[in-house]
Length: 322
Ligand code: AVJ
Image 1 (cartoon, rainbow, N blue to C red):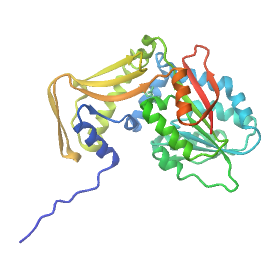
Image 2 (cartoon, protein in one colour):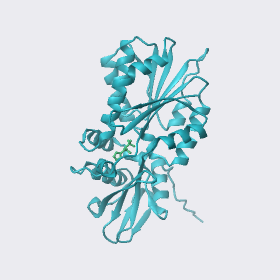
Image 3 (tube, rainbow, N blue to C red):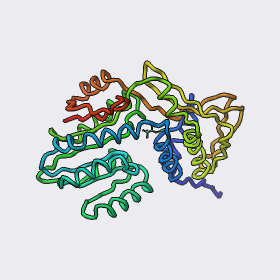
């Protein structure tokens, strides 16, 4: 008798997560997968939008306070580790200042996007050939494990900027900071960018720009599934639906299926049925108030050294010490 075994190829983490998310009820996709080459490009455009205040506020903060930060660091050498470095545009202000002050450090940008890391390394090399830049590709904690072990130990300074922490639920960000702290030593520093609660119209507009870039950014997630997993999503049948809840500070973004439809994803051998107006949960971008940040510090046994804010107090970079 001849037995035929179906060959199964190992599915990527992306494929597995898409399968899980679109088979769940309610349906969701993970926001970390926004950032393929096209997603990177669209996010760059988002950062330049008049409505997207976050990047400009944080740039102002870093410009204003990089001298204070450098003071905290003093003259001892350190390892600067940036989680979710992206194109490193905001960090540039900081690096510029550190270079001027001739601080002794190595820069380890960590990102899930290989594409953006290569760009970043090249740009930095052109500008400061003497700066040692060691890109780490991958998920944050996997990448952190690849850090060189220094003997004697060197102070670590971890940057987690741009309100990336807002992509996690409060419980997840607590677990995240706890896990991060476990990999650090007393005296190490963490600088985290939090977007603050503010007039809801301003927040909503940042995720519902008039040029439609944020919509395209969300649609690109579906298009990425088409490209990489052989899906047949038609983005024109999914409506971008951002929401802001002033109590939880949750800026949420959904894609709504405007009709009853089925989508087939070849690599997953999966048919996904959508009822009319069924939602896919696409992203959380949490906004904080200072009390929540203080509580987060307390629960993760981190000490707040400094709240750096922009003039309008839309955003804060919080300096924690382990
Ligand atoms: C890169 C996670 C900070 O949540 O504001 C921008 C991503 N999504 N517009 C954010 C994003 C839609 C952004 N972060």
